Amino acid sequence: MSTTTPTPQETPRILVVDDAADTRLLLNLRLQRQGYEVLTAGSGTEALEIIQKEGLPDLVLLDIMMPGMDGFAVAQELRRMGDIPIIFLSALSDTETKVEGLSRFAEDYITKPFDFEELLARIRRVLLRVAAAGEADPEHTIDDYLQVNFAQQYAVVGGKQVTLTPTENRLLHILYANRGRVLSPGFLLAKAWDPVRQGTVESLWVHMRRLRSKIEPDPDNPRYIVTVRGQGYCLPQRIRTPDGEEATTI
Image 1 (tube, rainbow, N blue to C red):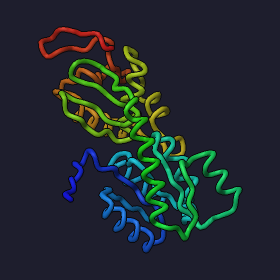
Image 2: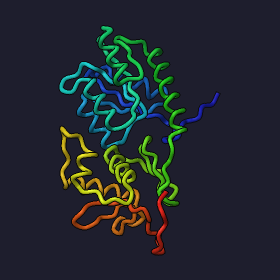
Image 3: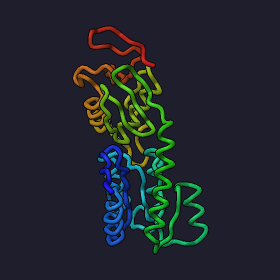
Image 4: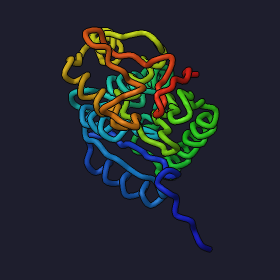
């Protein structure tokens, strides 16, 4: 019987976060054999850095007892980034920890040592639910050239899908929710960055430049993320078309 290799867009991406190298290696090998794309991180900080670089995964398998940021702290940060499904994999088996994990953060909770086939069944169940929910996630139409799905963190630019990083997605979402308003750098930094790890005006410039490079037909002459000198940034209610006319955003 022949099998069809999924295309990259069809392949769910799973991030494994565990400080135990043998667990990361085992899950990496066995999940790849099941056709999943796998990323691994040995700490919470590394996991967040991977997501900032690669974008949101479809699912996170997350240990709780880790040095530095524990699993609950990582899960809280993931929730801030977006609606990322989480399955806890932990040696902690007490009811209180399980209840806290399931009620606050996770889709599921599996205690170590675990049976891989059981884990695989639970992964498939969660991904099926997410896929069904994703079908209902709307693409917000800005104009005929640009549409954005904030829940799934991508933009459709001239018919081509482009992945947005969590920070890019938050910035664009804030601009979209405030269409026609000029938003100051301070406002954007307060809304799009973690209060603990505050952004800077320089980091805002960098992210805006990268975002423009992804969504603007001409990043040097932007029509979606417009700079109002001395005031801030704006997503206009009326977008300039290439011929110089204006069209109202939806």
